[in-house]
Image (tube, rainbow, N blue to C red; front, top):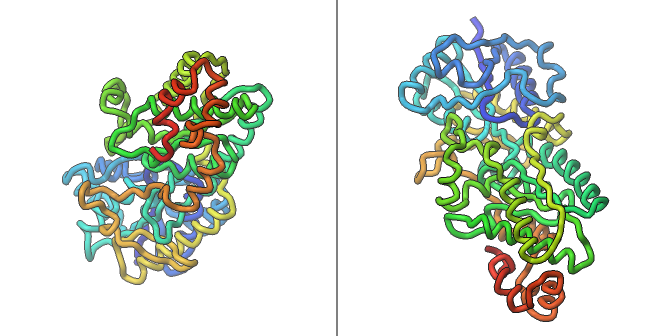
Length: 415
């Protein structure tokens, strides 16, 4: 009887999932394995219900690598919520006669796979393939996670349209993008589209972030643009800002729902509206009348048709996952370095302080960030000194000294 390899998808969608499924299936079949796809991630496995599966053949996957979405769907079920859930999930996998499992997902899916791998040493071969448009997994050489390049490309096109709309109508847009911990997607979209500015969590020091400072950062950029003769712009804000706001603000958001991993569903937090209303109020206080609107960009990115980079990338990752397992290994995330497959052990990805998968943040000390920042329009320390101070303050109802005092934090550089 042929050995069986199973494939499942966890977490949110990302462009390129089907490329991994296709290449892994083709390589496994060519290596003499039977391949099954498990629908809806860990959901049924963790509950003990009979999972819905499909036996995959080459004809089933031959052209899916160019499609967005996931032919196996996905879920956010946590297979390692507790010991009982983990044991149920493992028993369900083994009841399918599975010898090898490829889990496609982000940090939470990788965390679940790490727990399964640790509990099934010598019985199951486990490999994960890193997927997230947030690009926040610690991959070798700072490589992007698959799906990021497509999401950035599609998002940049949307922002370019908003820039033209803003120019045409003399208005401002506050664009909120996905990115729970990392501002990589927001920064990448801003840089690629040439948006006016991006605001990401990594720019703010300290464990808590004052939402008023974010509001002042955007309002200050609007005033500076007016001083330059422009009454329009687009500010791109990473949704992960919400996770860094003060405890008092979070208490007001306790009604927000949470997913299977305990994370607040950021889509339920009206960050765009909070910022829009705050900026409008600040501008009114400064005696300025400016139309400020908000736009969320997120869900339309996750199932987009993958760009060539992600098609190429995912086909190699799927192939590499199968070769890793058939070489007798288990417990690694499949990454690439210089075009070569480089497994990264799952336990090495865990943060010893939290027991969770480490998150890769934007390194604001790099030239890549510096270039993005230098092309933004936002208040800088020199803007709060003569002669720039007088020119910018003249756009408002504040005297130069009062303007400098009001925007001292927002114009202090890296915060």
